[in-house]
Image (cartoon, rainbow, N blue to C red; front, side, top):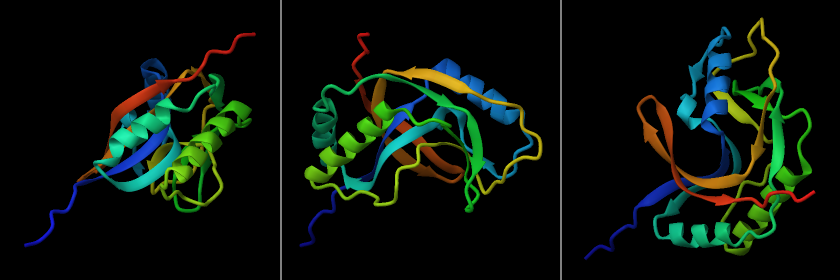
Amino acid sequence: MSAEIEPRLRLFFALPLPPALRLQVENWRNGLAIEGHLLAGSDLHLTLAFLGSQPCSSLARLKRLAAGLHAQQSFCLCLDRLQCWQGGLLHLAPGQVPAALLVLQQNLHAALAQAGFSLETRPYCPHLSLARGSRLPALVSPCAFSWQVEHFALFVSHQQADGSRYQLIGQWPLQLRTS
């Protein structure tokens, strides 16, 4: 008798874009002469922690962990740099990384590691992926996409013939700043 294999999910924590901003970024990107595979507008996000393949049973534990991240502050994030990494990932990045973003990412990573999840060890480089197999376009209109980040979320990645699609599993608020 063979043991049943528990289904697995590809999971990650990220900052989802507000719908209006997502549309602005998508329209701006679509106005550029970009080569490669464009990511679906509905999938635009800024990753905080990639968990990879996890058993479905880990969802409840991940949700409790996320809910337990107390005293994380909301912050303004401005994506104002169009860049392309050597592997062809065209993305937007912040020219100035907010300290609160780094604190959120580091606290999330620490909580995940303490809970026994394996994480990537490369340095964190916040970015919003726009296209794969690409390069910087010759002409680029200036960009500066800003928003007040008020929550973070857990997503599942579904592999499809034309690439991955992301589904929101849960989201958790960040505390508003009291000046």
